[in-house]
Image (cartoon, rainbow, N blue to C red; front, side, top):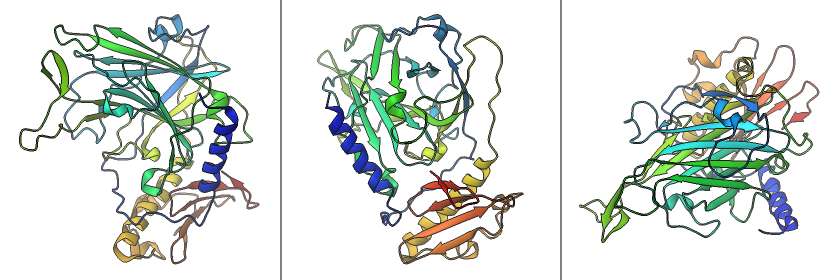
Length: 382
């Protein structure tokens, strides 16, 4: 692994880019999700004892932990159900955020062995984490059935200019893959593979400096999981990607996710699931997920962001009011207890939209999708 000093310098460079308010955004069309805003919710319990990361998920805490919803197509329920079943679980303790997953798979196949290979060229399992929910400075981890990993930091989503910091490593990462079958052997039929991941909080908190090293009970993060699955054929006793007879090119991969994105793009962090950390251990007592009312305001701002990016793509400028965006009749943008219409300020290449609470404080979004809260004093809470 790379030296921590290099990792810190890369992270600092990425944060500096993300913190530049005048950052330009790509002149591209931004598709709006075609599913309602209703992300899944999960209460993450504390592990009752040590977790050995070997991919087997055989500790008592895993056996009692809740599963997330069965994965569906990345675009949502209007698309066909996945061919194979996928589920995931989460746990945490003082040092790690744990992820476990079960991937039904009749044809275990993997080829990539070098760390930081483009793992989604194989069938894979992927984790995405945005600890503070601002859609910037988030983490991605991919792994295949050979337990080969690719970890990277996204300064911003690709739609907002990125970049992805490929040289960044999760120091102290532990991963394991357990195969229920034989790898790369088309002569038999396999059952599944399971993955187990331990992500150190010391690393996951780097993009939100000034916060405690580990989350407190009740804290909520944005998280999603994705599975890339190819159609395979067998040639000369080996698996190969199936090809389109008309073009001779490999068929497109399937993308299956926990929380649907509504577009074929996992890099819409605002659509990811909500994960709430709990002080309770698995199987002991109930805890409801507490949806925060501010998410309604943040989603209204996101609707304005989508409309502004579409307007800018067509006219090379941002709109000064909701009417120009065609949103003045949208009832969902009228939120009890918050200013209406929201304030919209523009320059030649930037915009900022603001909702202000009647009791003070405000939520903001700008042209690169960054969303943040300001206290009544004007202090940013980013």
